[in-house]
Length: 57
Image 1 (spheres, rainbow, N blue to C red):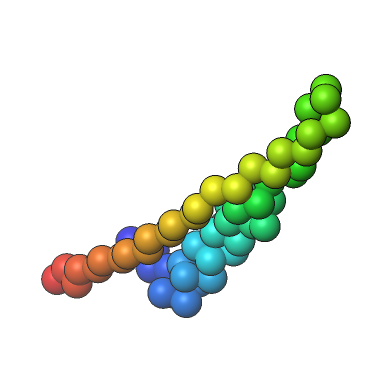
Image 2: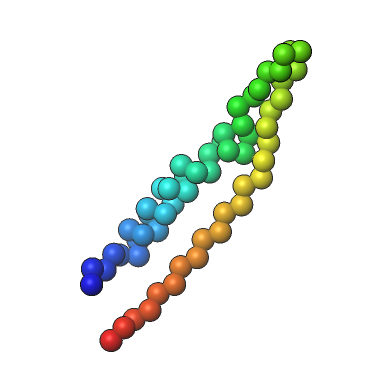
């Protein structure tokens, strides 16, 4: 079985998290309504990360 180093797994996971959790995710692109009102979407982003492992044989 191929083993992937833990650092490589963590680096890949964090790189993908950077793509998902960006400034535009928390504070979105402003939307201008027809009556010249601007709405800025705001959201809360929470991320959890866990891992597990086992040693066979």
